[in-house]
Length: 416
Image (cartoon, rainbow, N blue to C red; front, side, top):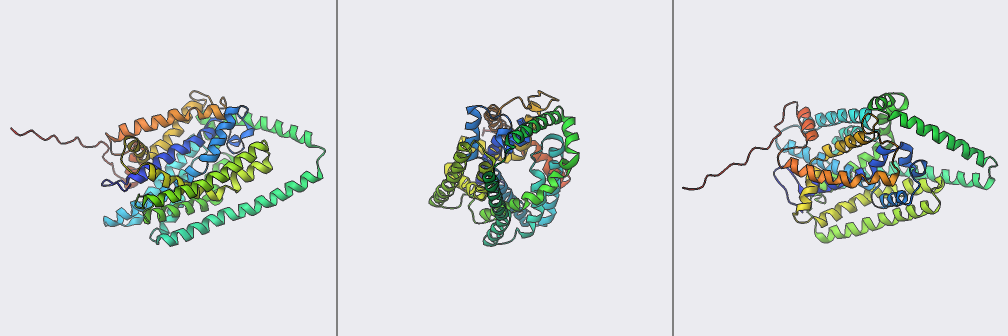
């Protein structure tokens, strides 16, 4: 699928569109209920079979993979923009760095005003670093990416095994105060839930919470926590773009091999993790290693598997493919728009449904948001050049008012 227009590569748009939709499948939980439940389901809204089913499906097929895919696409798109700037006779850095600065400003507003789960600040800062190596050959980009991902994952493995050994020793020794400790933890959890709901009583309360204490520095401290992973994923995207993997230039057989191998391994490990977590009733010593540490290195693998599968499924133009591509062309607007929808639904300033849904109930919002993305994106882009936030990003980065509406089609008069 190498179909392109003057300024678009169809495969990149379709993959990006599906990735941003997949991200919302997970993010909705972080918008609807306390952050702790996003990382540890039993803490809130996890009582019914539906809650466990939705967690299991997201755990096996979605969580971590679509965020990784979105990061990979960011690296590929960044390279494409820089290449086209250079080809047009402009200095690549003069195009790239204003884009990243404006993206960071959007991220700051997104994090402090709307939602704690912002990724834009991370992308902007890491994107500034990634520019340094964009000219490297694909093989060297992959070497760097593997090194960065190993630097991110290996210490986590070591720490996890140490914690598991310590948990085993504690279990063997026993603890006579177990019930008292469990009661204290439950009381503390209830207090945390009350504090968390207060933070979402209004947009103003959220802003106050985000500007105080550790929350104010969180996006910047997070760069040290997972910035290496983001950079590694972006470099994979640069390499995958340069060798034609993301642009549909490979043979179908090659894409099929990548899809089957990568997704088979990824789904197997995530299925084992989901099974063991459910069997242990989410005991922390089982859940955290199998939900985060052990599957973590497979997120880039699964992301590449999904990219290959998407290229295979949309190897020819289709109405559905065009709609996914439109979602991808307006991915920035769709990502921020999903947060706006979440704010309207859950903030006490508006509908005020925060903390009212369980995990499974919150996910029922997802298909409606997906449908909205598919419907509005193509309708809008049939009439306008860019999504609303894409237009704002472009105009601010170039410091000029970019034309928004597409020119009317030229009418050819019939011969007399």
